[in-house]
Length: 212
Image (tube, rainbow, N blue to C red; front, side, top):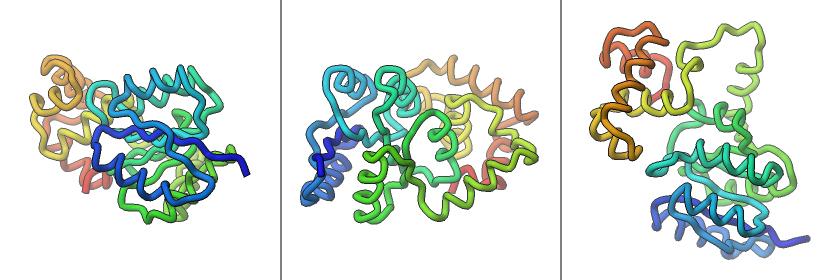
């Protein structure tokens, strides 16, 4: 069996160390590189050959979703496994549509990570059994789209942050954008979703299980 060469991309060093430890004892998997942000990921993907990229969705500056889209342009056949702190029903459908090979939450069991890496390395998709049911429901062509599904990926990210109680300044700092830009995103979100203020936005997010 050929060795599965993995690039781990996460802005938290403790997470990278933990993932490396989980995979280090697996005979057919080798973690050969790490990246701390989206720019590093893209630079390394351009220069090196990997079997799988394990990518965090929430990174400073350019998000994991942005990085995913650029990876798929640069290396269309390279499997990208998204590992996120966000529940599957928040982001999984979006990342799969963007070209991800699989989606896992960071509280998944270590053996599930190993299984997922092997599955996506073979060119298959990985989703948990729980999310498979959610995915099946979303494939229903007669289903009317929820309002938050009309948002762009960045707008959706800002929506979740506002609903989680973060201020515009805090969001701007996390995303390395200006407060004015975040304010513009907020206005677009309210307009698209026919909402009046942050309180209505937060209520919507809670009712639709977009935040915990």
